[in-house]
Image (tube, rainbow, N blue to C red; front, side):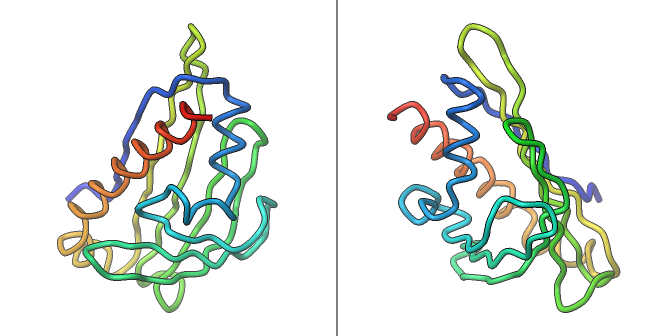
Length: 144
């Protein structure tokens, strides 16, 4: 079983504009149908408080921001209960697509003892929610 979910979308706008919307965590409840709330700052080493909606249920987790490359990418690592059981390395990467467009690569790599089992249960919903979030981000960026 593939233990990575990877999605891409083209957004009309600059990397700066996309970055601003993507890292404005306080505004997530206004537009994001998947990660409905994030508390914390876009700073490496920061522990976030994330709430997501998946499969009709809300889940809360507290990932650590591992990398932040301003205007380019950021990633966090979240774990279920403790590291090594079910871990997800979630990342957002922005690439210049030319002609005033940006490609967002939105992905998550899963590992841990329960990763195969849990992904069988939530993998499809999670992929669909990545796509929904990407589309909502596109609409938000292009409406500003």
